[in-house]
Figure 1 (cartoon, rainbow, N blue to C red):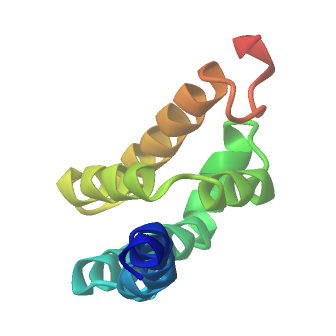
Figure 2: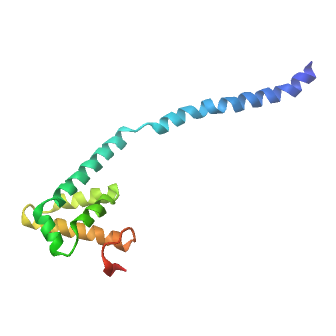
Figure 3: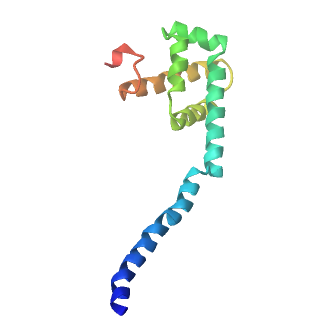
Length: 132
């Protein structure tokens, strides 16, 4: 009897260990599916930042300046939509630092131009032909 117990007990221990692994993995799988408060706030902030930029680009004077610079406003909107959350946050910070009034429109256009130029140079976008 002891001999049978010696042979069977490693198999029983191994089967219990293997059988309990899915139960140990389940709590981490549930945690991975949850959204933290910080992630939710970042998503909200990113959406608000994108909305602010879209609102600025929809202004008539901004569109006129874009056309005067030889840039298609629809293409700029597509490029802004393709920006990462970090780039959108940086762009909004630059917009906040600019003075109010007519200079802010030119400054905003300059910020958009710089961001598009950098993404073009990095190969992420294809707006300006002179970057190739």
